[in-house]
Image (tube, rainbow, N blue to C red; front, side):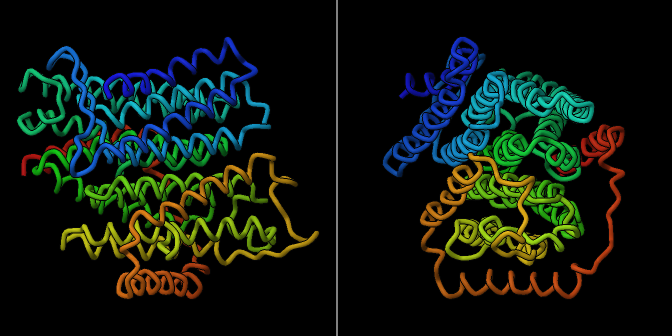
Length: 486
């Protein structure tokens, strides 16, 4: 068990740097690493049973590295594997260089590492490697715009991780250990600093307002990676804290509700398709945090559907939703867009339905109203895609001519995953569980057609500006300190 886990962690780094020696095999090696991660996640599901124990590894006693791999890790790792595989397939004929695939695999490996870390220093190292690899991928086109967006992301990320590192040192001072469990005995300052770092990295609440610009301005496959898996590297530790420490659970749930409502509030009024998806990434991460017990399954569902949506939107004739109303889509593209939109809205027969039902059943009473409003806002937002015009034949339009060769295999892999994952929680299919999501979706569509379709309201972007992002961190630190003390 220990040998397999260590080999799996080391494999992406070894393969990533080996790509330079075997540049002609870059795509095959990248895809192979993703397949290996998928196999490892399935192995985790098989060993983490009521009769089994999660894989726990500890090196150098309390001073060193502690790893914990269980079914929660398995859901996040499987998400990373499927999304990475889809992105590699999508880019198969795009002419991407070995440098691109190297960064994709290093990013894949470091994201995987965050899903098994159980100590603050190992997590810090993994998150910093993620920042570097993501920065290089965002800046890959080498345009002035992409370089600025990448530098903005790197600066915000590194500033947040400085807060986190100070908090980790304070945890060690209180416990003589970097273990996650030491957070319970740490000072309020330590808890607040660590939470701030992870809230920023995870794109949570107002600390995550750097996310819409970064995800919407990146290349299509990079946007799919960022929203599908990278952002979850900051969310996973928060879910783990909530499950390990009872006193942390209410704080995580509170941020889950706030994040879900904040993201969807922007998304329902957004007229840019990629920005709408980015704001919905913020909102859907709130669902992951709102019910930590089932956060892994929701993360898997969200990762698959959001990556598919970014790949599809990247192949539409325009990002402007108003323009798309006058540009009929090819029917196959429209069907793929509708299937993904149905899943994230909670429509039956797709895993988004089971994930939403399971999440709603694990909410505390004070969360119910807020999360139901967020679910309604989700239906309103994705009605924008569902009611787009479409037609087959020569009159229909498709992004930039014909979709690239890897588009359909990548999208079908992700959408197929949504269908297969639907069987994880087949108990959700009762009359009561089915009626409520359908009613929510119908009400959301009605609200869109009668109200939001004609709305011209545009929410201000002031808080997304670079200088305000840093200021918000200070305000969030005060809020976190208050939340931890109370």
